[in-house]
Structure formats: C-alpha cells, structure tokens
Image (cartoon, rainbow, N blue to C red; front, side, top):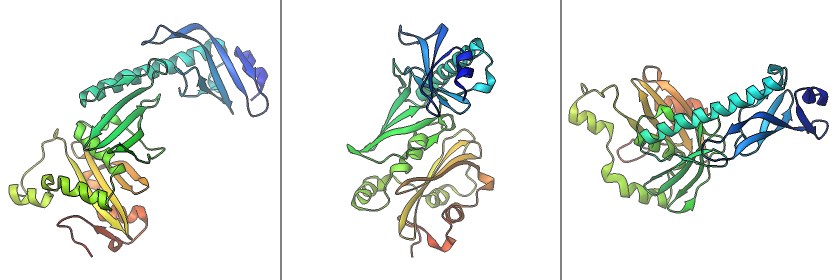
Amino acid sequence: MDSARLRQLGLEVRGEGGRLEATFVLDRPLDNPVSPIKVDRVDFRVEGERLVPIAPPEVRGLRPIALGAVKDAEALEAEVTEAFNEHLFHVQRRSAELRALGLNPQVDPVSLVLSTQVSESGLALTLVADRQGHFRVASATREGQALPVPPTHTFELSEFRERGALVGYLAALFEESTGAGAAARGQAVGEGLVRFSEVVQAFGEGAVVPPRSGLELLVQLEVEGRPYRFAAARVAGRTFRGLLAGAQGKVWAERFELDDFPGVVPLVAGLLKVSPEAVKLVGAGAPQE
C-alpha cells in the first residue's frame, strides 16, 4: 500500500514496506456505553488493501475496512463508526439471547468484549463473543483441571433455544469417551440416561415431538480405536445443529435438515474417510464388536 494514499485519507503513517501501521484521529469520538472514556484515535495495521483496527481495546477486532471503499477522511470515519456501532448492536442482541438462556452476560468496560460463564456437572466454560457476534470457548475446566480448547471453533448462539441444548452441544467438545475419569462420570449419570429405544417402547412410534420443544441427542462412537462423540441439538422444526468431536476437539459442526440426514454411522464414515464397518457405537445396550 502506498503511504501517500494513506496520508491522503488523514492517516498518520509509520513503518515501511509491508509492515505499515497508521493512526486516524476522529472528528467525532466514539462513545463507550459502559465507561466515560471516549475513543478519539484508532490505530490500524495495514494488510494489503485493508485497514485492520488494533487499538485502543474498544476497537481491536472490529471488521477490517477496505481501502477501496473509502475516498476521503470523512468516509473513513463513517466506516469506523459503522463498524463500532455494529459491534454494539451485536453486544446488545447477544446479551438478550444469553439472558433468555438463563446465562449472565458480562461486558468488559474497557474492551467492550461480551462473555459469559457456563457450568454444568463439573464442566466450567468461559464463552466469549467476537466483534461480529460469534461465540467461542475461551477457556474450559473440568473439576478444576484445565482442558485444551479448540482454537478456531465458533458457533451461532441463536440456534439454541434452551440452555440444556447449548450445554450438551458444547460438552461434546470436551467429553472424554475412554479412561477412568469418563467411566466414573458415566456411572454417576447412568441412572438418568434415556435411550430412544426405551422412549419408543414406552410411548410407541406414533408419539411426536412438538415443533417448539427442545431436543438434544448424544451418540458415542469408536473409530479404529479412537473415541468420538456425535451431538445434535434441535434448532427449530426439523432443523438441527450437529457436532462431531474427537479427543483433539471438533471434527465437524454444521446445521442439517432431518430429512436429509444420512444417519450417524454413514456421516461419521464419510467425514473420517473410513468404511461404515469401521464405525462402532459404544455405550450400554449398543452393539459392539
């Protein structure tokens, strides 16, 4: 990027070559809604034809600004303001969604980053939203012991209508399928497990799940000696959000329509590039080889 072009936009440029940074002074400072501090300067890292906000904390991580979309300093300021207001909108919207799930939204007064805490059966998670409103797991512990966190896995919060569906979906990322710890947890909750074969036997195949009822499922598998867990949470109607996770974290996560779903074993076999015969269902009552 030509430094002269950046200066024409009112930017103070420093660095050289491919390591340029620039500072833009705002005519109309940005208001921090939870702090009296106003943002009157924005620092960018120049990446090709984009300006990436890096400071102060209130704007770090805002969507990059395409230089081709701005012709002067006024247009650049409008882009910065729009990106900042877009983030505030996401914070408000996601906060309301967290409350609807019975979770407590927390907004850092300096960075304006939205986060929340989720705890269930010894598993404690910290969820953090990015500037575009996508959530990720920032940290996880089980019984006080830190767990490895998938570095890039994000999810859409609005797909979960009930807290239990969200917790079940996230727990599949961290649940161990083998080992003494997993066996102990399985024994602790075994009496509360309900198999769908038992539901069908009790209520018959004609029973239905109402359109707005929550529904989540969990299937434990083993592929070539390695444990996996498949989890699905109903989004609405016949739409589900699915997740396949192994010992190293997420393998696959997508929405799917029930009518198009091939079945757990064919799905896992296709994703892992193995034969269906290599996929084994595990757990009490499941066929094993």
